[in-house]
Amino acid sequence: MSMKTLMTGAALAAALTLAACDAPAETTTPAATDDMAMAEETAGDTAPAGGAIVELAQSNADLSTLVSAVQAADLGTTLSGAGPFTVFAPTNAAFEAVPQAARDQLMSPAGKQDLTGILTYHVVAGETMSPALITAIEGAGDAGYTIKTVNGANLTATLEGGKVVLTDAAGNKATVTQTDVDASNGVVHVIDKVLMPE
Image (cartoon, rainbow, N blue to C red; front, side):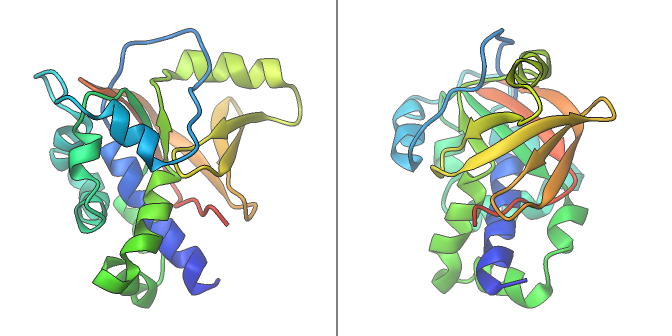
């Protein structure tokens, strides 16, 4: 596994941690964005009281590594904004599967750009609850449902054994293990692997 892939994984984990917040359920498919600028625009206002994504992630011990990554990438303010966001958040175990040397590099000042890219690969503009995501997957057929992330790269969502599975650009798969963690500025879906944008 390349250093870039490992860095992407670490950043993704952080992004997912921030995404552990809730947004009202919608029946539409996830909104797509081209870059972090769009996410920053939606984050212009502070999220309503009641627990923004970052606050919820900070209160979940199993997402502490992701919270650290989000802070290192300076994405805390963006993910605390009004949103809404959908975050696919890797657990601490998922993040720890990335080799220590790669994690250390990503968390260093020199790795900030790579870390940001990975984290934003786990974030989607708009709020998509699991029933809407499953409906979109079912409507997409065997090829799976394409999700455009804030990073600009795509994820492919499919159903396997009744569970939502996300496939990244490298063909790695992550299973959604917990859905619809509500926050005042979006929703978080917890995943068991870190995803890489390339």
